[in-house]
Image (cartoon, rainbow, N blue to C red; front, side):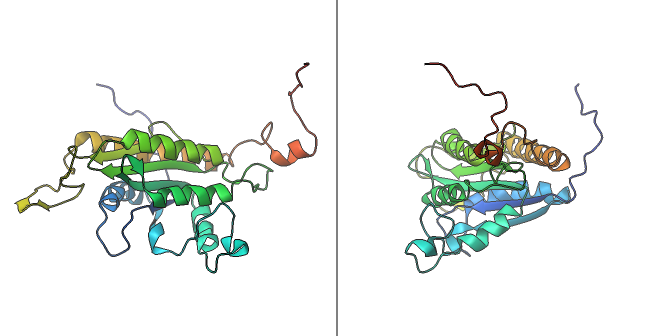
Length: 248
């Protein structure tokens, strides 16, 4: 039997932010939050600093600029929230599935992350270089992989690093039915709560969590990515490394 042979890693000092993109404001029950709790518990056991927010609880404007108050909106909490998100080494986007897609709140989060993607870090790279992303998806209809595909593509496009198997999720039977973490459905008790005994979900959630931690720890230890060949500032100043224009 194959067993792990490496020493237990130390993840102390890492910070993770879970953004639950449920459509339900607090304190309404969120099934997505129930699965997020599994990943959070693993990270907390590994002495990682963890925080979870619901984007819908905050007055975040729609748009693709860093501060939409400069573009006609009276209020926009995004600049304050962004500082919290950016302080984290790991970002995990949680979303329910509606009509086969991630929630509208998840799309808003992605658009606001994109608003900051043109900024650069101290190495002249795009701002999110060196940070790690993953996603948690729940629902009672098909769509986990479809939602994860869109979320993880978007995160890597703006600069987040995506480790292997960076998504996890749970779905019930097609059509109306109990959701993840429900303890009762139409008068019938569920013990354990719905989905809690899914080995597939539990395994993928565990693997996702540790893959996020491993990659975040490696990147933090080496100070992110080397900026040879990927510095926006250097490119703008005329440095082209090995690039050669094609003859037409």
